[in-house]
Structures are given as C-alpha cells and as structure tokens.
Image (cartoon, rainbow, N blue to C red; front, side, top):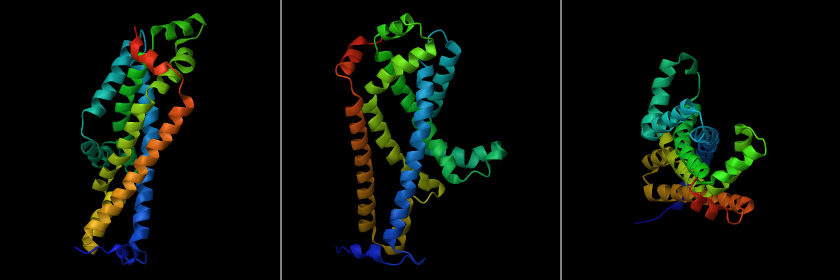
Length: 240
C-alpha cells in the first residue's frame, strides 16, 4: 500500500486544489455546526426553562411536547423533512437556502437534548435558591434570570460540552442534502482520486481537531465561571 499525500495538491478540475476544496468544506462544517449551536442553545434554554416553571402546566406540556418530538425522531429523517417537506407545506420557505433548513433541523434536534439538560440543572438546585429569589421580591422571571439559571448553567457545562461536540459531529449528515461540508468532500474526492485512505484520514483529523477545540473552549469557560461547591450542592440537593 502506497501513500500519496500530494493528492491534496492536485487540481480538482475546477482550478483549485483538493486541499483548498477540503478547507472550504471544513469552513462549511464549522458554519453549520456553529449556527446550529446558537439555535440549539436559544431554544434549548427556553424550553428547558419552561419545563420547570411552577404553576404553568400548559407551558410545561408545550415544552415537553417539543422535547419529545425532536428527541424521538432520527436526525436524518428530520433533515429530510425540513429540506423536502417543510418548503412544500409552507411555500414562504421555498426560497430559503438549504444551509438554513439544515441549521433549523440540526439546531432543533439538539435543542431538545439541551432542554433536558437545562431542566436537570434547574431541578438539581436546592429549592432554597427559588425561595431566596422570592424573598427578595423577585418575580418568577427575575428569579430565573438572576438566581436560578446562572447557577444551573454552571452545573450543566460538562454535559453541554459533550452535546456541543456531538453537534459538530452530527453536522456530517448535512451531506445528505448536498451541503458541501467535510463528509461530502470526502465522498466526492475519494471517487475522483481513488485515494480514500489519505482523504478520510485528513477529514478525520479535521473533525478531531474541531471537536478538541470545542472541548478546550468549553473547559476554559467552565473554569472561568465555576463556583466551588456548586456542583456538589446541586447533586445532593436533588431539587427538594
């Protein structure tokens, strides 16, 4: 078996090298993952918080339905639904680029998982946190904003790290609807060059570097915002 890494310096027939093509595909992968992460965090935090609201049964049911819907349907199926079905049901969305539709699919899928983590983080806090906010005269919204959520998010940073890394890896399914990300590059370049080993090793390395970077960024954030004893207290408090 011979190795030829110079394949990345060859022209792909469009005036660019395979290395340039791969870097462009890497950029698309990071764009899909990063934009989807923002969508996932916004909706995950929202619906995760709604699931813990006291005296709001309908909002809790709505949030539970959101989580169960997007968590129990395979991601690839959701991407196909967003790409092929949603634009037909809602004609106004026909002009949206495929990139946006994939971001919605991946973001909403991940938001259901983040919502569950947010719910667990809120419920892990001792009820004294909520009572302290009420004693200060805070409304429910203010109690969540200033007391509960800042503590809950500190607790759930480790699982959020894993979810962020999973989101990056899950972005590979975007190839199914022709988003020019790393997996699609690997499949097409392998067919054109017949150098699958070199191509897939390089793509694997880029995924690994990206995931490791996410891990280090989240670890840095966790170190900066951690409060000694919070996780232990949350784990033993159990929300009682």
